[in-house]
Amino acid sequence: MPLTLLMGYKKALYEANLKFNASWISEEGCDMESGFIGMNKLLDQEVPVTAAICTGDLLAIAAMTAIYEHGLKIPEDFSIVGYDDIPMASRITPPLTTVVQNKYDLGRISTRILVHEIDAEPGCIHQTVTMRPRLEIRGSTGPVSDK
Image 1: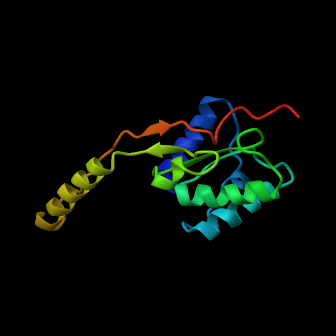
Image 2: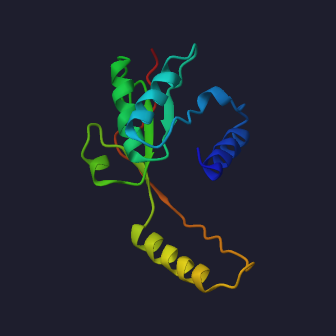
């Protein structure tokens, strides 16, 4: 899990007076197989989780397969969020809730930083840029049913 995402997760737990549990974090990798394996590990715990945030939409889509194979319904039993808003995210069932970044701005800013880094003197201070993403709420999230 990227450090900034983990820090945000821990901060949100702290603000909600909830304890951090390292077993709720899966760091298998960035491909679809990793999403499937990681979700199976989370769901096979003694006290399984009921929601997940994935660092990419492809991971989330693969994780959805594991969720369904455990006999769970999305979003009635499990909520899942991806990151990237790939075209497939809005077309799967249910449509994936995802974090959206403006890809044009990301490319423009990344190119500007790259050119600056190439032209910079050795030992020069590097830039950090923070972009404000937005959450695109779709059908993969909702309150968990009371069973």
